[in-house]
Structures are given as structure tokens and as C-alpha cells.
Length: 464
Ligand code: NAD
Ligand code: UDX
Image (cartoon, protein in one colour):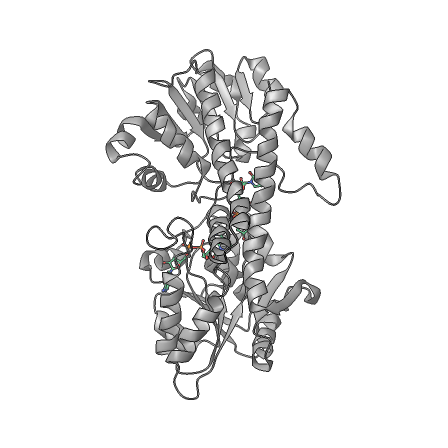
């Protein structure tokens, strides 16, 4: 790495924060400044209480913050000082206008790009870190070039991020691969090498792969689509298992032993959540439609349709087993995050399920070890989920699972937090209404043990 290299990251979110903190940690001679327009978020990054929960993140940040890692809301200054600029802003699904509900909203990427063009006083390598539709780098390049002044050069790279939340730090420390896309021109390849040298401080050379910009951009959408497709496939099979008496875990195990299939990402569940899978598939659907490939669009759309079906199937099973009515029943919801080891709730299956529990007039007791109370309230009071009045009437948040389950008719497990495996379920059972139900949306509790205590157990992908 060049001596005294300076890196700026625009966007201090789930990706920008951990990614650039690990760069600072692994490259002590590089100065990394992570900036965001959201001053509260920056203040939190500068405090003892980081704005996101991610195992191992505190150690990394506390080891280099103030040394070669800085968090700031002085966006312009950080841009001016940097050699390399990561653009790691949010790219949510568009809510209105052309492509609403499918296309990515690129307004944040564009505004960050324009800011770079406007304030830069020296040449920069601009790195697209956000997940974007194919050919966004070209738009960024057009904006940068149209606005650049004499003697200032902008090179653009695509460097999509493959970390998963909950395992971000190990994913970043030991990535399966680092992908860098660039224009295949001498300048493009030179820029590619500068970034590759940064990663080479800790990533084996053979894992740093380079290719053209568009392949790199599309690879990110493709990887997420393929991963989500595996989950929808196993979830589709879980419905067959429930109807036939086969066990989806056994089917997944048998299939996963085939080295061509592999064992990972075949765990049936109440449905995938998270900020990426649905958004990126819808993005791919929109891209396919724009390219006049309706059959391709329809194919990928099914992955999302199946995911919605999985959630509604689970809901129907709950209502049916609870004697076809949830009115005034007490439901303990265990887990609100979209997966374990994160406080993130974006697209969490819990939001959809609780929305329907509210509509069915149940009393809902939510417990999650990491999600903030305010986050749960914000998610459930979104338009289309519940009104603040409905929320107040129906939902109570607990900080103790035993309290949440007290006087409950049923427990609905929606996140696979480890601690749910080791609760004293006899104690839980004793304080519940009878018959006491457990609906395991993650297929990870000890069904036999629960049945021996007296629970009525329902598991996805298995008849009990
Ligand atoms: P996020 O919402 O947590 O963070 C984005 C941050 O960018 C926000 O704090 C926002 O205030 C800031 N921002 C927006 N516009 C800005 C601007 N013009 N100047 C300065 N700051 C600005 O989002 P995230 O989860 O970190 O995702 C970022 C990107 O990475 C998305 O494109 C996403 O698809 C992609 N991605 C996410 C994950 C994941 O696990 N979350 C994984 C891989 C890729
Ligand atoms: C995903 C991709 O894995 C990551 O590479 C990309 O950079 C961002 O999107 P993330 O959404 O953070 O990461 O978590 P992931 O572990 O992929 O889980 C997504 C959802 O799928 C979760 O709700 C999880 O519970 C669910 N899931 C995952 C299953 O239901 N079954 C599985 O076998 C795996």
C-alpha cells in the first residue's frame, strides 16, 4: 500500500462502518475516515455504544478509533483529503415513480457522487460499495466527468460487499473473495491495483479477483439472488414435507451431502428477511424487465413470491392450531431481528407476522435480546402495518423472555437466537395458559423435550 494513503467512506451504515473499520484495523498506515450526513449516527460511532450490534465490531473499532480510524460528519473535508472514496450509502427499493416497488432508489448514490465532483480538489478513485443495478458505475462516471475541473481525474471501481450481518467481522477478516471491477483500460486497471493492494494487507492474493465493471455489479445481484433462491427452494419443499410427513431438515441434509449442492443456506425458515435479498432480487426483476426479458423477470420474482407464501403459510398454521381465532389470545413473540446476532430488523419476517397478529386482535408480547424498543415501535407503526393506536393496544415489549411468555397461549419463535435453546422451558410452561403452544419458525428447538414438558409443538417443514 502507498505510504499515508487516505480513505474516505461515505455512509456509516451496516456496510460502511464494519468494512472500513476492518480496513483501518488491518492497514495501520492507512488513514480511514467514515462520514455520514446523519450526525446522530456519527455521534454513536464516536461513543461507547456503537450504532449497530455486530459480534467483534467493538474490539475492531476501539482498537483503531482515534489512531487511524475516524468518524465524522465533515463530508466535504473527508472527500478532499482522500485518495480513495468508498460510496456505501443506502440503495432502498423505490417507493414511488417509475419502477416503484422494484427498482433501486439511486438518489443517495447520485447525491454522494455529485458531492464528490463538486468538492474534490485532487484526483480520486471512487469505489462503488453500495449494491446497485448493473451499469450504475457508468452513470457515476458520467456525473463525475461532467463536473470535474482541469487536472482532476476520477477513476471508478465496483467493489461489492458480500458480508452478512451477524458475521460481518469474520466475513471481512476472512472473505471467500474480494471482487473488484473496473474499466478494462490502463487507467482502470491501475486504479484496480491500488484497491487490490489495500486488501492484500490481509486477504490472500488469489482471493482478490478482478473483472469488468458490469460483471462485478451483476455478480453482486446474482450472488444474493442465488442464495435467496436456495432458501425459497427449501421453503417450498418444507410445504411438501408438512403435507407428507417427510422432514425438511432430513431432506436438506441428504441433498446437501451432494458436493454439487453443498450444505449451506438450506435451512428452512419462516422466510428470509434482511435489507438485501428482497431488494436485490426485485432489482434484478426490474433489470430483466427493462431489458425486455419478461420470462427471466418472472423466474426471479417467484423467489420473493415463495418467501411471502412461506410467511402466510406459517401464519395460517398458527391461527388454525389456536382453534381458528387469535382474538384476545396472548402471543409471546421470541425474536424480532431478521436473524440472530444482529439488532437489524429490516424486512424481518417478524414484522409481517406481528402485523397479522394485530389484525387478528391478539395481545402480542415481544422479546428480542438485541433489538431496541424504539425500533420495534417504528417498524410496527409504519403505514400499512399498524396505526399507533393499534400498536399501543396490541403490543407490549418485554426485556425478559419468561415475563413475555407469562400467561401466553402460545410462543412464536421467529429468530434463532442461541438463548432460546437453553431457556428453562418447564418454568415457561408452568406460567402459560393451557394448552400451551410453541410454533418454531426456525426448526431449532428440541421438539421431544418440549413435548415431554407438555407443549403442543408445531415446526416448519415437519409434522409433529
Ligand atoms: P445503511 O442505511 O445502514 O447506511 C447507509 C448510510 O448512508 C446511512 O447512515 C445514511 O445516512 C448515509 N448516507 C446516505 N446518503 C448520504 C450522503 N449523500 N452522504 C453521506 N451519507 C449518506 O445501509 P447499509 O445496510 O450499510 O447498506 C449500504 C449499501 O450496501 C446498500 O447499497 C446495500 O444494498 C449494500 N449492502 C448491504 C449489506 C448489509 O448486510 N446490510 C451487505 C452488502 C451490501
Ligand atoms: C445477505 C448475504 O448473505 C450477504 O452475502 C450479502 O452481502 C447481504 O445479504 P444478510 O441478509 O445479512 O446477508 O444475512 P443472511 O445470512 O444471508 O440471511 C438472510 C436471511 O435468510 C435471514 O433472514 C436468514 O434467517 C435467512 N436464512 C438464511 C434462512 O432462512 N435459511 C438459510 O439457510 C440461510
